[in-house]
Length: 505
Image (cartoon, rainbow, N blue to C red; front, side, top):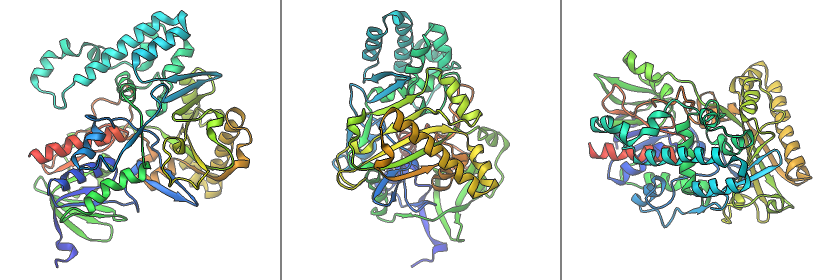
């Protein structure tokens, strides 16, 4: 048997997030000898599941898109022969997201034209701005669907005729469109109700990104039938059981060895060297560049300079003795906003570190699937998230663990106050588990720099262009939320496209 320092593979994948797992599984399925190295003790990145007492929680992912036949997530499992094993429940198509602004509750159905008509029926005085708004949304969605994966010269020459809206609005924010059509304030908040899916207010988020996000969930919002751990482990096991392949957990890559414009292999923190013909990094692009032990051309380094997306505070709650369905929850998510100025809400939370009256995302996984495994029989879980400032929590931690813990507890208790007052009276008396995570939690367990939730920032002035998959080294590639797009659907789609490209080369 060769020693560890002589181990050679066809492909090394750094990081077992959803993009890395996708690339690794598809390459292994094609007969490539794949080594996947993951620093954490479980695969999945933000989609990983952790155990706390008698409960299991997914770290950050709550619902996903792209799971219907012909869509990227489904296509990955289809190619691996896993569609009979990995199935998805569709959230309520008549209202997969419920947006609550003040006391106004609106259910978002699948079908943008249907949603438009329901809003016009409910808010007839806003019929004109609603029609103008959805005309742009639907038109841009159709153009985004028609965009080729690889733009060629012919595409650039014909773009003004084929993609006029995408070109016209490419630098617009969502707020720009609101102002352009004269959208009333309350409807601005309702239509931006899914803002937590990119963690930006209307006056910052790229309009194109907002359209893409809304359009993808419009085609169906899903939850894994046997929960996220099963979805993730199915990909991991496909690598583990493939001939000549390995998936090593708690194995952090310290450096990427490069010479003569090519990567030779990687060295792990314990000094073990692995060699390969090709390397794919699922790690953050800025982290990846720091690992390369050879000079990297300045022009490429400039491409990998970007602000990170906002981070989150998340509550993980185990609940017994009540049924959340009796308190306004069900086969859908709930978005809570204290008032209709979402720009101000985000500004207060992120810039002023004020979480006294935050927006909240409320997810009920035990109501999205009746498969066992998340909670004891008869009990349920509730996951709650909102946006916050990384540096605020990091500075408190630098001042001392007690100061940091006190703030974390204060924020947790304030969110519980809101839940009890607005949604679940007496909630505290039914809590069998309460756990809070901060940006530092995300940084530690998900290896997300500055606790970022979605890779590089998705604002209108930062989203274009994304980090390329290619690097100055002809056998090193990157794929993740920044070299691609965020979310499970986005990263798996990027992983699928990269795998196809690598297998065709």
